[in-house]
Amino acid sequence: MKKNIIFSILSTGTNYVLPLLVIPYCISSYGLDGYGIISLTLALTSIVALLTQLNLENTFASLPIAKDGATISNIIIIKLIIYISVVAIIYLLTLMFINENSFLFILGVLPLFFCVTNVNYYFIAQQNFRLIFYLNVLSKLFFTIVVFIVIYLKLPLSLVVMGMNGWYTTSSVVGLFLLRKVIRDSPIKDSEGAINLKEGISLFKIIMPGFSSSLASLFLTMLVQPFMAIVTSNNYSIIAIYSICDKCIRAATGFLDSINNVLYSKISSLEQLIEKKKIVFKAMTFYLLIEFFGLLLLYLLFPYLTSYI
Image (cartoon, rainbow, N blue to C red; front, top):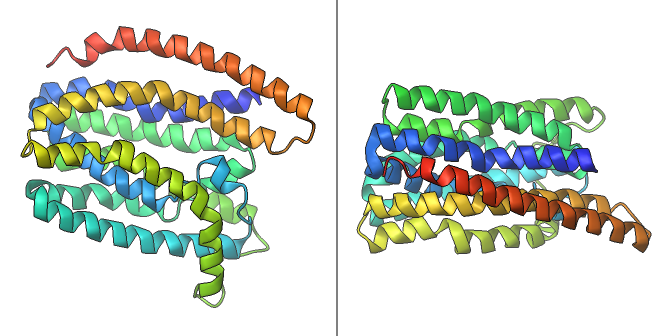
């Protein structure tokens, strides 16, 4: 369990730490307004990623799902429908309220198409956090280097946004390839080539509890920047400052979420109450350590993050 927690923390941590390292370079190359445009576009594309992935990478959502080829095929089709619907709705809303970001949004959302084929939830349910670590971290490190190069060369903002979302591509494609090798007796693609409507509805009912929690996250966090853009008439400086503070806070809480994911996965496999209590006690110790080091890291990084403002 300790190794799983470490792998999960490192995997989740890169979601928050790597963007923090990029922020000062974005501001120095494109200015505060330029970073505000990037941040707003990433906020819009993150809504697509959140809804398309159905929150299946949360252990609570992934455990009840059957681990066979037909189910995975149905999930991919459900994701595709959601992806197309959400992209269309957000694009129309950006045309109406945030017109100058509409084309940038379309370019930024292209790499997120591969969220449709993301099957990492399968490995999370199997408690294979080591593989998730390798899939996510290597992809994020590669595309972070790409983003640094793009910023250094002062290339268009669209390439920065696409680079920040690019890790979804490699992580999802490689994960799907590995899963095809795991499930040899049940092909990923259904032989009839079509989803059974009743099976799809029943599957979505199973997914819905975990998916509803992602909707709560959407309304509480990810809609803030688009709302600020509408209220402030696209004042990107204000959006940029909010984004920096938001990313610092989410970096601290994100590590705790990664522990919860491993904790729930482990507890669900145990039967004795005493063993469950021991694991919860150990997890609380990790919480305190993470909080301490998170606050220390924030204290050290904040002057660096705001040095170009």
